[in-house]
Length: 501
Image (cartoon, rainbow, N blue to C red; front, side, top):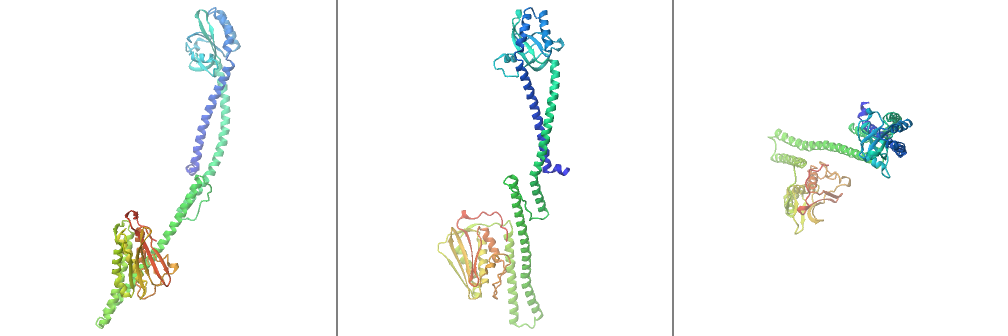
């Protein structure tokens, strides 16, 4: 019961019943009030000429004086015929000159003439209520007519159509019947409307209950359920929004699962990439310690070169992991400035020339004259460019070519790195920018890649409002490109690090 009262259905139904009861009471009061007004109007209209007819009996007696026996006899005959009437003789100012009631009933000595004048006017709108001398402040229907009072001058015959005893009896009976009829009608109406409303609310809130059950299912981990709600009304729109929210939650949960899988894979890859050179270095060190006195200078040099190679690989891996961690930090923001991309590209080529020569690879560049300055973070762009050149050199066998070029396209400066390596299979193109991913096509002995270069470059490029594009033909080579803004106004507004894939 408590759960029902606290539910949306219980609250809506309770509010509906309270409003319905209030409306019924207001309607009952309006019906009762206007029924009384209707009865009063009918009674006054039917008896509008009553005072005029009574005046024919009373006026001759008035000429003999207000205390004459003839007047008393005339009034007595009238009240015998209709005991509900109360008769008053008023002067021109509305003061009561004579009344034919018990003195103990009279509570005021004058009545207002405004209702009498409205009654005597043409096209009077009934009911017109006048003062009741027997009840201070009370209003009743009446009939009136001007009369000549003899010595007192002009006055009025004022007739209350329903006197105090009659009014009490008639009012009691009328209210009894009216209230009984209203009670029965309102009771039946409320019963019908309440049953209809409760059933209707149950139907309307059924869709809300379905949505509540779906949301509760989300709490339990059931993200596959959907609300089957049709319609374009507010509830239907809410159902569609919940379904869309459910799809978003399901997609985010799936993304979290994939991210968790990538995290596990990344930890495994890092462990492997750290363990392999460390194990190799440890083996060479142990061998040098074991054969310290028996090593030839050539063997010692060979061991030291292997140790240097392994430590260089470890340092390179740690630097790239550090760079990834720095890019992941939300407090790191790009520092945009204007600089010459041609000069930066030329300096980067010079830096990688020794590596290219040691691997027997031709490293070339093409930077058109008069290139405009770009607006970007020079440090991050240099890091991305270095990673792309390093990746190209790592994936190009001896005798191959690596070419760097810049060109203005669509209001941005495009940077391309092209190599003549083994290329990338079509199914691997979407994977090569993931962390620690190594293409299966790379099998030459000089390869020392960590699988982080393209991932770092991708993050840097996205910070500059662009994306890293990889085009490759298996067995022919690969082209990796990105673009940066030429003008300060076109630079992206940094609002936080993008989500890593």
